[in-house]
Length: 294
Image: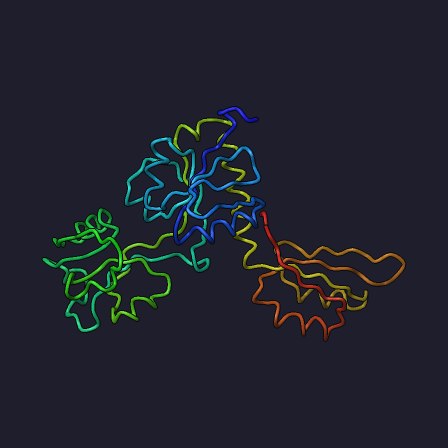
């Protein structure tokens, strides 16, 4: 049984990031499971004590020391103004690897074309404090109201404009809204409590988690390739192969053939494999990767 000092209290974002976060942790080597309506997942690491917390609240609980570390968006860290350590930016979201955006959006037929046109208008958003600061920086005075949800349907009856989170813009377009301006781009952050960060054991544990999570993210866009190549074609094949460093080449026992292994960007594979085959490579194997550690 671990002592209290050997337990890391980890906040996992509940909601839109939950599923993608659990998948990322699995690739990093941590297997979480959570029962319906439970806020306390189990994990196959007895040094971790995880809890599901809404991303909007994560920075507050980490800054207060209720959690040692947690995953949340840069947007909510800035909104909360929590005094935390930003350990790393982890570029993943609920629908992929691109950052999410907070945008000012208005009805398609609105006369609002730029930020200055929001003067005296009513704006609905969950990101209230950051939006107020953004408008103040641009010299705009407007009424910013907290939105409890379904923000896209509020213009024009309940609000003149909204500040809303989007990844693709499809939901905004479906509600006949157009984007005026992006006010913030946000990726996921791994944040830590300042006192926890000063603790040698906890800091090392957090840094280990960060290393493995980043390795899992980097692996999502790459694959491994193995192949056999005759000696007379080795130089030609080597010139075709991009890799992180240099391809690994090993001589096959008792023959003039070589085994080559590389890690490459996944989008290159569909064009590269036919070319390798034509140039003499055989036994070509493509395989997925869980982690790539630089």
